[in-house]
Length: 333
Image: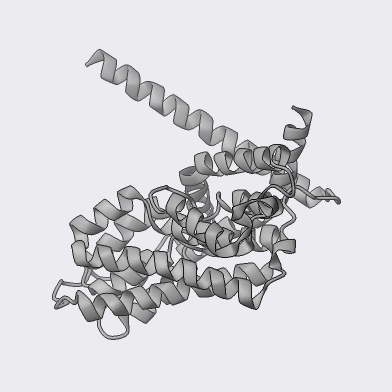
């Protein structure tokens, strides 16, 4: 038990500074940019490219990107721009990029950003080619400005953390459990040591699952530390956040079956192909993973870990109290 607790603490030490920094950057972007900035730049020509450029840095998981993307479609974005935004946005974001660099190294983090952009562009252009629309929807109203204040940035950062705290906690606990239970050479002595077999197996598991891009990074790092090819971890971090059953259903309803097929094919084939490219370009990247090996517990990392634990505990308490109130209200009605 003590080894598990120590592993949880080590994961938090690696995760917390980068996650909090990413949340802060996301809050500043929200406070500075007008609320309909994304909508206005995804209409007309070049919508696919703009959708990817704006979607890659946004810290939105599947649960947040769906309403945003369908809102873009309603406000005039093309099917291609909407698909590009849907594919690229949940795979990465400023918070996910920083956390990935901490656990798997900057080469992996940069490659993951490029992979999100490539699959987003491919999916968007294929959608415009094979499932086009007339783009006749009306654009949004006059641009409104965001809450341009320190308080506005802070509130948005906290709201983002509140949205993912459950998945974040799950990711930390699973990562620590893998580190403690799974031997370091477990995957090296199995069929999953083969990059293609491992990537395909991970794809089959990831497609229907809901996986948060940021919270799943520690899990991927722990699997890499146990011997799984880093390319397979890339598949997990691409296909997991971009696809799940709920997302597929919403895309089918909002954009149609043809767009859904293109979407799933792009994510599946793109993640496998790019994982193979990663293994070819960076064959020694598996050694980058250092989850759970924080030798120098600096005061800054400790302070960030304590702060993150406090925030997660507060959000857990608030959400539990809200759930109890709703349950009590339902029982009285």
